[in-house]
Length: 456
Image 1 (cartoon, one colour):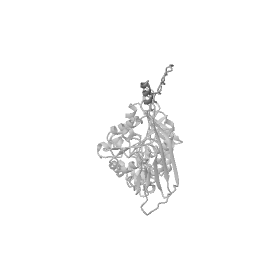
Image 2 (cartoon, rainbow, N blue to C red; image 1 turned 60 degrees about the vertical axis):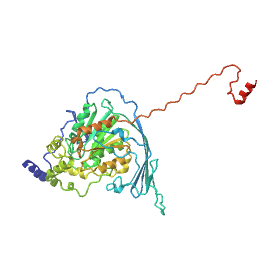
Image 3 (tube, rainbow, N blue to C red; image 1 turned 135 degrees about the horizontal axis):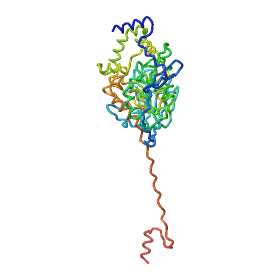
Image 4 (cartoon, rainbow, N blue to C red; image 1 turned 90 degrees about the vertical axis):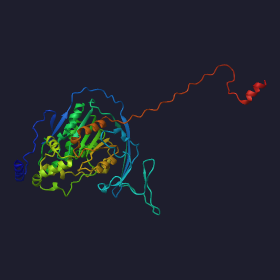
């Protein structure tokens, strides 16, 4: 306790934390860890595991194809109208353990973008509307009123075929990327990295700048969303293969979304764990993280206790040990303040998410106090191809609380591929019957011909 008080006094005097983790000045691989210099003086620690496996040919056969067709209309009053034109995808193919399916992926949606935080999916539908058999919502005007047809400000049409295949650990062209959120590190993925490495998957997990053993820049501009997104892009381009699967948690989901929108052909599947709704990022004005860094350093014990209470369904010695072993929420107050104030991404609104065609699995811990379940449900509605799974025993750090359940859900999703439609069988053409060369009459007999024959 005395040491902690001395560290906070030193920070108030010098402005630097005594427990900042400094990366090793090397780029050599040690125990699966690599240090990548994404920019001059900006070093990111990466855990990269390539297991010893016997590579086999793809035994899954041809990939399944899903049509992704939708029309997105944005009106001047901020209203967003999404009309899905493709056939519904059965959500039953992902019936995993301890989870529930979300909304149907191709339901038609009409919401107010400006009020998406306060409007639930059920209340977002307009009044006096009726759905027909073509998944098109037509509004019925009230009697005595004539509604003028509005012209949208912008219209986006998506029309593509999404090829989805089974991704096994024995496939050499599959890579799994794991991206953590604010205050975390790559160590929070320990159960997932070990599990999938044992199954033969190649896994990549970076430490964001200022977290774990990555470098800690001393300027706030180094922790904006755009700066961190460029780091994640550099790591992705370095380790990417033909079929890449992204797994993000909390703030890390935003970086996965960024990559899926920028590289839709290279991202094969995506997993969002307690990532929140499809809203543009904007830092909160009234937040404790706007306090000076020295005050945050003094409040660090309270912040750690609050994170433990809100991030886990149970607060006991086991959960405290998990935080300690995974090096979670062990960042300096300067980095924490810069990360929270740098979450500005106005492009990541609902239209941005509605344009993503990557198949997505959403995992939500029901006891999460940071991200309400309504936000993940909203994300499942906006995405064109998404499945929502709710874990009843988990909270915000569900991958640490329920590792077996999360690993099972992720593995089922990696192996999932839609059914390949069978080609219709061509009917055999009837063989022509050869007529005899005799001069007998082969015409069918009629009653008149029959009677004449009998009279003779």
